[in-house]
Length: 338
Image: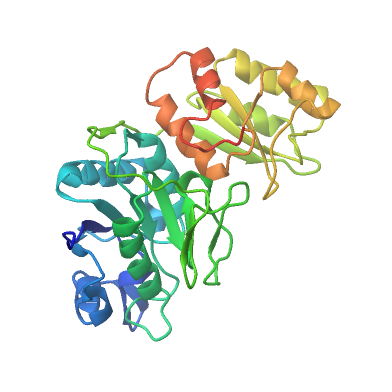
């Protein structure tokens, strides 16, 4: 008995994958991506799912993405949720990991796969990685329903809120430093950390997000404490501090006093490591412990993308500072390791 072919909704938000060559370089061109896909017979083989491509107007460079655009994508998926078995979002690579992380927090009761992908070379060009990325994303969404927001690139499906852009030029553009891939598409498709489940019927809930005043500062030797006083002033509601190693910072009294003043004024200070891999442990060294004593909280092994988007998600809920800081340190969507 043959099973009916799955239906996948493709949201093309913009990005390199659908761009067209012009005298000024590659530019987004309405209708061009759909035209390219329609000329590629491999997308229409019997093993492939049915799919509908919805192109956003206007198409966006992902560098221009904002929290309003995350909301637009989430609402679009919610509108089409009951009519499709899975979702593929085509997106520029520059902020793809931010959108993947944001959607992971915004979707509650997600019972269908949502896969974000794109390419480093446009689909229309020779040697494009877009064909493999899109073909695999469609096939995996239909046949390997992993109920979370994933990011597929270069034959690996990563958990969306664990992925980060690691290479500006190579095809292996993304990595997941603290969590192994959900799935790898080699000669065989093999599940790794992903869990395949039947499609769930529970209604999807989409949380609202809005732009938030969040500061991000990277520590460096000789950093002036006065910078923290500037960054910790209202309307800033949270500050992500990218510290050294396992969460260390200079122990200068001026810096610690500045952080203490900010925390007392209601700013949440989240300590994330600037290392590519590993986690914050403020109890490991005296320099980290001093931060904890003035009220800085640990971001553990969250990527900067996950930390920033989780803050957007939680700050939009108008929680108390204590509850915000409690939930920041909870594993809500698989973004933190035990």
